[in-house]
Length: 346
Image (tube, rainbow, N blue to C red; front, side, top):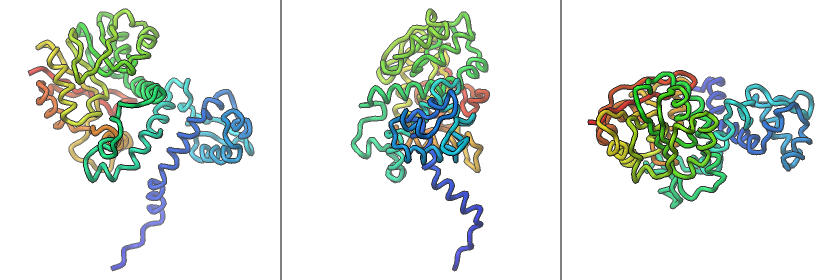
C-alpha cells in the first residue's frame, strides 16, 4: 500500500521543525560573539564586526545573513547590519535580556546532553549518569556558573513582580527563599511588603551576586544571606519556605528530600510555596508556553534527571514530604506558565 503524498506545505513546516536547531545555534553564536551588543549603538559593516569579534570576515558575513534571515538583525544595505527590536533582548543591558539564557541553553553542556536524548528516553536516566560525567551542578567552570546564575535571574525577573503582587506574603513574618540565587525573587517580595523579612539560601556559587542585587533593590537590611546545601538542611526561622524552579531539577527521591528538610524546620502554621509549571493531565496540541514547558521537561530528563509535574504528582510529592497540597494559583503574564503551589504541614 502506498502512503498518501504529504501536503507540500505540511512537509515544509515539518522540515522547519527538523532544522530548528540551526536557528538556535545561529542565534547562540551571534550572541556569544557579542553581535547584539556591538550593534546596540547603530549599524555596522560586517568587516567592522569581524574586526571587533576576531572572526573570519567572510564566515561572519554568512552568520550575519543568518541572523538577518531570522529577524534578529537586518541588512540595511549590502554588507551593513543593524539590530532589530526582535533581537534587542539578546543585548546584555536589555531590561528583558535573554542573553545568558541563550548562552546557557545553547551552550556546550546543554547542547551535548540533547545529543543523547535517545539514550535518556531508552533508559529514563540523565546523560551524566549514562556517560560517567559530573552531576548537573558539579565540576562546572566559573564561566558556567556566571552564565547560569544570570540566566536564572533573567527568568526570575520576569516572574518576580507577578509573584509578589498575586500572592499574599504580608501574613508571614519571614520568608526563606530556598535555592534563590542572586535574590531577585525574594528582593521583589520584600520590596512589595514593608514589614516582611527574608532569608536567601543557596550554595556559595549561587549567592555570589546576592549582596549587590539585594542592595540594588533596597532590601539588603531585611534579608539574611546564608550559604549551604538544601540536601543537608535548610535554615530555621521562616514561616514560609519558597522554592522557585528548584523541584523540577530533581527526581522524586531528591525532590522529596529537599521538601522534607523544609518540613523539618517549619512551624506547624507555616507554608510551603513551590513555584513551578503545572502540566495538564493530558497533552494535546499545545499553546506556545506549554510547548516550552514540555521542552523544559525533556531538558530535565537529559540534564538533571528531574521533571515537570502535574498537580496530582505535586500532591503525591508533598504528601511524601509531610505536606498537604492546599491550593494553586497562576502567576500573571509574562510568567503565566508558573503557579504558586501551596502546601500545609501535616
